[in-house]
Amino acid sequence: MEIVCLRRRARVRTARARRYLRATVWTRLKQVLLFIAGLLFRVKVKVRGRVALPLKQGFIVAANHLNGADSFVLLVGLKTRLFFVTSAKWFVGRVSRFFMTHVAESLPVMTGDPVGSVAGLCRCIHTLEAGGSVGIFPEGDLNPSGRVDKLNPGAAYLAARTGRPVLPVVVQNLRLDTVVDQSNIRRECWTGFLSVAENLLNSDIELVVGDPVLPDPEPPDSPDELRREVSRINRELRQRFDELATTGR
Image 1: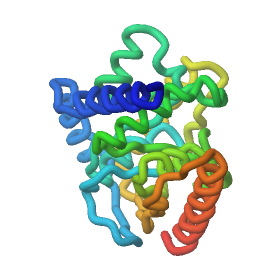
Image 2: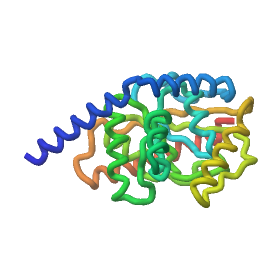
Image 3: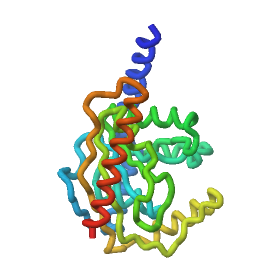
Image 4: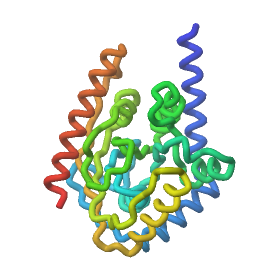
């Protein structure tokens, strides 16, 4: 009985996610803003893998995280509607929460808290199951070196749970003169905005798209199988990022 109830709840949440994926006036506003951003961010896209743009099915887009301009570059370059996994700290306050949810179309996750992140990961799963694509920075923090030095399990976990492929993408040649100050949220917001502004009309920006990592078509039957599958996906994703680092330029 409990399993039936859980499945019913999952169907209800997926149905809600489908409604969330429907175009609204805020979706149209975002499209207009992205059209303007496309005129200001001059992104060259290099596809190294077997994937066509814009993405036609649900993908987990995993990318390096240089500064605040990354998400704009990914949206403009991939020409795909992405729901970015975002720290829950940006959803504090009514106005901020409304903007992040309806205009930025972000998914709040409690970073650094395995228990608190469950609700956010469930939102990501339902979004993927409803056919949406999710953007994630698997390092979980800024890394101005341009490399992906570590991989948290989030992207691989979502792939293992939903059967959706992970698409590795590397952002290159952003201007990094502005250092994003993460000492408090106001400074992070302001310096993040400046890091976006300094990359307007930057004609050197490149987006390198690799081969997707495919999860096992059979979903894991136990926690141990899930852990093994997450580890396998992360190993392949690590290899893809290393290949893009050597062939992207």
